[in-house]
Each structure stands twice: as structure tokens, then as C-alpha cells.
Amino acid sequence: MHETYDVIVVGGGHAGCEAAYAAATMGSQTLLITMNMQTIAQMSCNPAMGGVAKGQIVREIDALGGMSGIISDKSMIQFRMLNRSKGPAMWSPRCQSDRNLFALEWRLALERNLNVDFWQDTVKEIIVEGEFVKGVKTSMGQTFHAKTVVLTNGTFLNGRIFIGQKTFGGGRTSEGASTGLTEQLESIGFEAGRMKTGTPPRIDGRSLNYEAMEEQQGDEKPGKFSYTDTTALAKQRSCWITYTSTDVHEILKEGFEQSPMFTGRIKGLGPRYCPSIEDKINRFADKDRHQIFVEPEGWDTVEVYVNGFSTSLPEEIQQKALRKIPGFEKSKMFRPGYAVEYDYFPPTQLKHTLETHLVKNLFFAGQINGTTGYEEAACQGLMAGINAHQNAHEKDPFTVSRAEGYIGVLIDDLITKGTEEPYRMFTSRAEYRTLLRQDNADLRLTEKGYAIGLASEERFERVGEKRKKIANLIEETRTTKLKPDEINGWLADLSSAQLKEKNSIYALIKRPEIGTTEIDYLLQFIPTAEDKPAEETVEQAMIEIKYEDYLSRERVNAEKIGKWENLEIQPDFEYDRLKALSYEGRDKLKKIKPATIGQASRISGVSPSDISILLVYMGR
Image 1: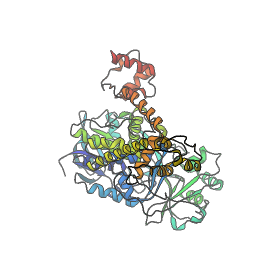
Image 2 (image 1 turned 30 degrees about the horizontal axis):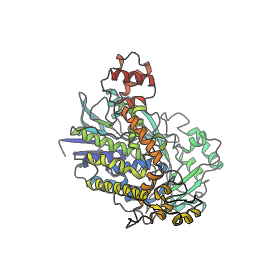
Image 3 (image 1 turned 60 degrees about the vertical axis):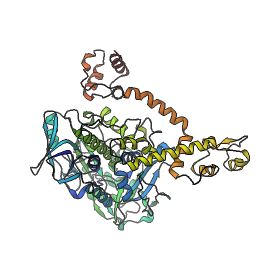
Image 4 (image 1 turned 30 degrees about the vertical axis):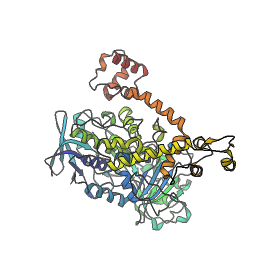
């Protein structure tokens, strides 16, 4: 063990794994402290990665040089590209994962990194000297010194599990809570709160009747997350869909009097967009059924995850209600669903680097910041790990702007607006979502990852080659022109307007009738194309051509707003000197300490007139 580490990461979940891997890969001596070495990278809830907006985040992590995309590719059992019927800004990759294989691959990735050391223990206290964190103390009395510390405690800080009227300490089933750290941080001056999440029961798949359900297969040509040369799936496992009913709902209502949600024993707010089944029945009383996704937990297990049936009702009510669901009539439960309530720290107490304002070189990442979801946690861990390394070696901070990635949107939302309920990423949160697509994350971010020493040279060169091929293909579509007699018959079959004179393939691609399949037909007319372009090259070129006007408009808007983003505000700016500021605006600015005018403009309670006053003052 080292006498002093560059980076200590507390917690071995998705945020902790990305933080430790990033810092170590960039050259920091890194110590990962986790309560249980057997649950590193545990998928505590559903065995899946990606989804709407979340899939974009996984692609961005991969583009920067993180591992979530590679690990997902190595452990997936099904792949689907969601929202293919919509525009490309909405296309979102999602995979069903082998829960055990996912955790194993993450542990192997960390163990193969020689800059990572491990220690199994619970951190009870951080060591603070003056304004700086200097290390941690554990429950077994060990002291570890470090230049920087990253806290990724997940749901374990004073965690309590609820099943009906039963309640006991824990951050996850069969795992204890972490105590002491919240109280110390509050004594330093941090503000803390409580949040709640939950998980469904796990079922024995051998007891289910799949013939009574709808089969949900993966894509015919499965994709992958990583831009590296990971292997796409050759075979896949199906998921299944079934539904609750009024009978199911009536049984569940029998347990409402024992529900910790409705009796007030749970104080924290749960995720709005992933509510428990009892919450759905209560909030959407007009609905007589709700969708249930039946998801296998891996290649070689019979365990099944009942997505859509998260609950903290008594076990007997859970089992009784489940057996009224089509296909579940003879279901056997492995373990019941439960709710967990835990401490979090409002993220307005952080900088864009995820370093805390109160204690220098101390970083928070993941559910400790009030987020929900593996992907949201992982990207925060990545950014915290990068910046912990940068601080430890006295290098410049690293950030991603709102115009560069969903990661930038997420972090800016958290530190600027805060959150009073578990924060989940959606495409609607990003004002530049046409630019921030899942297909171009490497073009947006790999150069940034390479510049700081996280993304490899091989990745960097691969992106450069990809960019060149896309540009060449677009140029070829501009210069290749077709005669009416060459193409009009084909256009007629598509019910597309006939050509009256020669026109370029570029112009034809812009037509709404022309999709990916039709573009393949048009590309055969390009005389310089010796080989068929790669699928990703064609897809990128198609999007750039077809959505040229939209993309151009968003780039212009991003550049305009970028001028404000780059107008820095000093951290010790004395807002009290500006008497013309509104009282609410002044209070919010003093509390959040925005780094730029752009961030200040997005703070709830800071008015446009407050921003004008700041601009006038800074102009002077």
C-alpha cells in the first residue's frame, strides 16, 4: 500500500468503478475502498444498460475513454436501438445484461490496472486539514492519506430498507448501511437530505408461463455501445411483456395500509419516472393495467427481473398480486421487492468538476448527488475521477459543456438547479439534442479524452479516420450527379418526384422518402467508391446531409450561448456589492457560486435583469 495516494475512491458501484479506472488510467496511484469486494459494479436494480438518453451517456463515457460501454458489450445478452421510428436525435441504444458477468468484467478491468489498489472496509470519516481533504478513516481503524478523495456512496449512507411494516438498516439487500460520514459532513457545513428508491421482486423463471406473454426480441442486427472493436452479439435472449389488471390492483390495495410510502415512514422522495407499482396505482387511478417487462438476469440463470413492479408492500401481498398477472399464475419468488431510503447531498454544493465548494479536493459522484440510474452515476464517476487526477497533479480542470454532451447537461443541471427528487436524464433536458446524438459521441468527445490522457491513441486515430471517411462520402454525394433516365424509374417506385434534369445524390438524400435502405441503392452510382462504405459512415453522412439545416441552426445557437458560457465569474465575487440585484437572485448566486454567466442565467430565481446587471458590471 502507498503511504499517500493520489486518489482515494470510496464506493465500488458504477460511479466508483469509473472514477477509479479513469484516475488510474491517467496515471494516478488510486485506492478503491468498498464495503464488499464481492459486489463491485453490482447491478442493484435492473440488469440493463442504456435506454432513452441513458444510451447516449454510455456512448459518451466510451468516447472519453471510460469503460461502461466496453463492459456492457462484453456482458450483454440482448441489444435494441430504441426509437428507430423517430428522428436520429431520439435513437437510443439499450442492452439487457448478464448481471454476474457485468460485475465480473468490471472487476477484471480494475484488477488489470496496476495503478489500482483495493481495500475492503467502510469509510467512517474523511480527514480534513484547513480547507483541504487529506484522506479517510475506516471502521477497522485504518487511516489512508490522499491528495484527493471521491465519495461514491450510492444508497448506503444511513440506508434503511422497507418491506411492508418491516424496516432495517441497509443500502442493498443483505448488505449493511454506512453510518457516521453524513453526520461528519453536516458538522463541516454540508447540507444533506433523504431520497428513496426501490426494486421489484426477483422470480424463478422456471415457474413462469411465457406462452401467456408477448415476446420481445432483440434487434435483427444487434449493435453495441463501444466505438472500439468489441464483438457484437451473435445470439440473444428474449425479454417478455405482460400486464397488470384490475384484479392485481385490488390485491395490491389490500396492502396500502402497511405501505411505508403511504404511512409516512419513508420521508424521501422517490424517482418520478420510475415509480413503484403502488404509486402508479395511486397516481393513475384511471388506468386499469400497467405494462410489466419480464427480463432474464443472464445467460445461465433462471432468475428473472420483473421490471415495472417495484414495490415495498408486504411479501405476501407481492406474491398474491403477482400470481394474478398473466404468465405468473404459478410464480415462485426468489426475494421480495423493497424500498431503500438513504442520505444525499444537494448537488448545488458542487463545482462543474464535481469538487465540493466547502472542502477542496473532495469530490461527490453518483447517488450521493441525488441522481438515479447506473448511467447517470457512471458518467459522474468518470468526471470526478478525471478531475481528482487533474487536481492531484495540479493540472487544469476538465469539463464537458451542455453543447458537447449529455454529461455536460446532467452536471450543469445538478449543480445549477439542484434536485429534490432522484434526477434522471431525458433527451428533452438537452437543448442541443440534435447535435448530441448517440452515433457521434466519439466525434464530439474522443479528442477531449485523448488530450487529457484517458482515451488511447488508437481511439484518437480511429476517430480521425472516421471523420475523414464521412467527409469524403458527403463530398462524393455532392459531386456525383444522376440523369433523369438513370433514376426516375426508381423514384417512381418510391412515389418521389421525378427528375427533370441532372441532380446530385446529395440533393436526393434530403428527400423524406429516402431512408437508410434507399441510400444504399444511391451509393452504387458513386464512381470512386471501390468498397461499400462502413455502415456507421453511411449513417453519419445521411444524418449530416438530411438534417443539415437543423444541425447548422443548433451549432449557431450553441456558439452564441457559448460566449456567455466562457465569460467567467470569479469564485470570490462579492454579489452583495451589486445592490441592484434582486434579493432572491443575490441569495441564489451566493449559494451556488456559478462559474460563468451562462451557468448563472440557468439558476432558478436569477432573473434576466439580474444577468444584465452582472454583464454591465463585468463590462465596466
